[in-house]
Every structure is written in structure tokens, then in C-alpha cells.
Length: 167
Image (cartoon, rainbow, N blue to C red; front, side):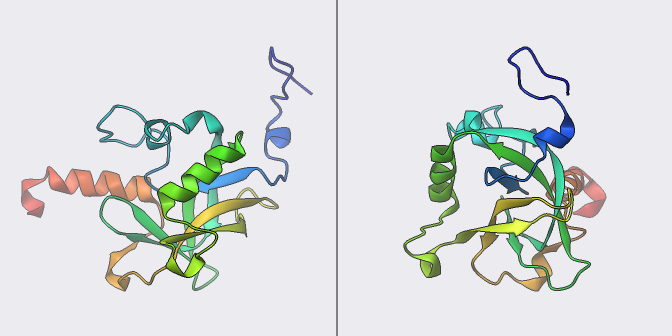
């Protein structure tokens, strides 16, 4: 098995082994999104970026909705429903607790929370479970993002904003 200078495994299978310490983000928390006011990813703007390490892309069951500046994920309605996300290793559990506050998740008041943090099984990579924030309301069906890729949806939205024929 290959290791880096700190003795950590660089083998992709080792980096993706099942763990309780995984998080999937699928919207404004993804790394490298355009139009960041401060020139930083949102996780870094929140002061918790060092608490997570991006592992790579993933796919999860669910349906994505456009709520304007950020998306909402709801449970899949069929086996075909999936959302593209980013898989992150959770390096600091306190960062996850701070993210709960940002996402409006209160474990003491799930019914009053905007999002719920749930553990789900990923579609890709198979065999992994990770935390994800699921929207705790029913968004308008017309706001659905097809095919469940926020990054592609944002690029299309930005392109149409600069296209005079789309106005």
C-alpha cells in the first residue's frame, strides 16, 4: 500500500473505506463553486473548512430542488432519482456540529429544523454510508433540478443570465 510523507494511505480504496466519519454535500457547500463573494468556498467562509477533506464525487438517492441561493434534497421518489454530490471525510466532529447550526438542524427539535442530518447509503461509491442534510419541508415540484446536479444547474443558470435571448 502506498503512503504519503505523513504515513497516511494514498490508496483510493483505503480512503473510501466505510466509516462513521463521512459527509455528503450537494449544493452551496461544494468546493470550487463560482460566484463566491469572498473568493473562498463556503466551508472556509464558515471557518470549518479544515474540519473536512474532500474525497471526491459521489451519487446519492434523492431529488434536488432549487431554493434560489442553495438547493434542497428530498428523499428519492423512485429508484431512478439520484443527486450528484461531494464526499468529504469528517476530520473534526465539532465542525459537523457547527455545520448543523448553519443548516438549521437542531437535534433537540427535528420538527422545527429546516434540514435534518441523516445517514444514508450512497449509490456511488457503493457500500458507503454518510451523513447528508435532507430538507425538512416540501418544496414546489416546479423547482426540481434535473438531473440532480447543482453544479451543472448553476452553470446553466449563470449562462442564461448572460444570454440576452433568454430574458
